[in-house]
Length: 450
Image: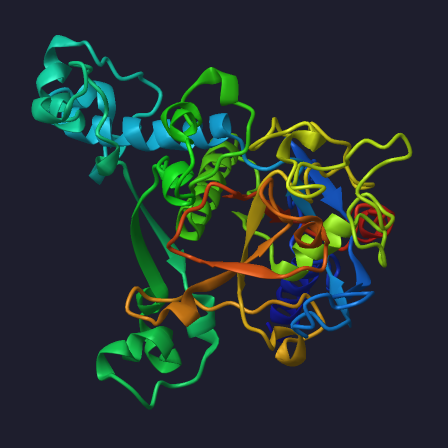
């Protein structure tokens, strides 16, 4: 009997070994292979180290960008600044989402997804983005009336969308708070902002909700400059097809971040529908990433195109800025110009100097270069509405159509307040590369795991 029991025990052991790769550690098998293509309209920026900060004379002697060796990982960056037409897609998506919520009660079968394929109810339901909104539909008209300007506010009896109602609601995870220690000082109501033990029980304490109006401030063309006639730009710049491929302006830092989150959700939803692995989120670049990308491999050059001059060998200006003694038209542009009008840098990025300055995700502090780490340097601060203005400063890079050449230099630091919108500031997105470098060979991994 004992021999028979031993025999069966050996069979079980041998069988289990055979099912687990003979006892060897092989990792989870049959994992789907992943390849990360270049996102549409983005350029690949390799990892590397560079001297961040001024490499020549500190013109204003501000000592806020002292030379420092900084290393950054690989990432993708938009080849151009986000254009009016690209940002308009975001605006239209928010507009149509609000419209679907308004008419969902009247026509749920068309504009809402209330249950899954097995008949399980969704609470709350999902918006059906596949069916277009019927703005002139009999059932929709009454519900959609709330989206338009009231009659007493309409000009020339034109029925237009009330852009004050275009609010985008999104959520983000405060990883800084999740990584911090216990909150021991300050207002007890803020305990959830930095309470790691509480997060171990309920992670929702780190989830932040934002509700923000996403329509650009088109009046920025007027309120940024007194005693000038910029009314045509206010009336037409964001909407007219003539400006479709011009960089969007009048977008504050919060709106730029909201665009990145919406863009991430758009891509993730598509990949999820295709049952593919999601990719890194789109976001604003850090100050270090922006400078590394702008240099284009020319580590000691003051400008993105390499060299110390703002003209090429033929005497043509290489960017849209304020040259000479204020001759705005001398470089071919008066205000902004169409994106990619000037040559790119060596990594394929256009307008990293001039046209419009660009938001980064970095908070501005004069001493950042002294206290920030030299690996993927960044300083972030999520300012509240109640914080003083000095805590709402965000780094702006690249210079614009209204700036002199000093602000076009890749090392020049400037800032604006996160809740302000300017007619000379736009933005572009980045996305982390998942892995070390593009040239990593998968051969070794294939030998081991396949």
